[in-house]
Image: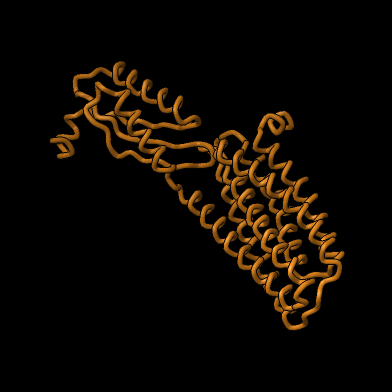
Length: 300
């Protein structure tokens, strides 16, 4: 178990997310503590959810790494989508809390203290987040990991919140308008809410067996045509993407006189070409003689 965790790069990056999130949380806590700003407090709340989401994502990746078994013959990869959906719900909940705190600040406005020290701490946290979200999204796309991509997108929303927050917060000492602090909190809440719904939508698409991107499916069609010149046709092609694995099944039409050995060699050739091009795939090919299809008026 420990060896598998060490060897799985997705899990290692997920563990790294926990430590990075805790570091950023401390920086944003000091930003809020030194300023007593509702905007910095809202930003800290979002980061607190980042810590919880990082822990949840790590657990999901460890569970998803388990090989297929009798109860789960197709593997455990969908655990990542469940983790991403829960993370999205946590993000939406955080947005609600930020709205509430910002509303209270709107009713009782007050100027933050030591704003430039707060900006220093918050800006440092933003730089750490920016570097880490770029790494997570890149690694998540490389290994087709919904959990890492969702985590990276969540942190990216945090980065944009930090940028907007600092830009607005710089103005407070000069214009002396206390309500700007609450307005910045509302803006952060809206951005967090948007990202939360985006993460939920993408995770639900994965749970509903969404097909791979169009360029991937078109490439697979070309590979089937190229590597099955002896076949007459293929149809009923279906795809679904589950984590890093692409599931493909289709019907291959061959001459009725073709023997089983030749048909099997064609299937092996197709499977090998797709695996070399796509990577982690599970392919199921149903071979049909042309006579059966003519009876059903599927070939003329």
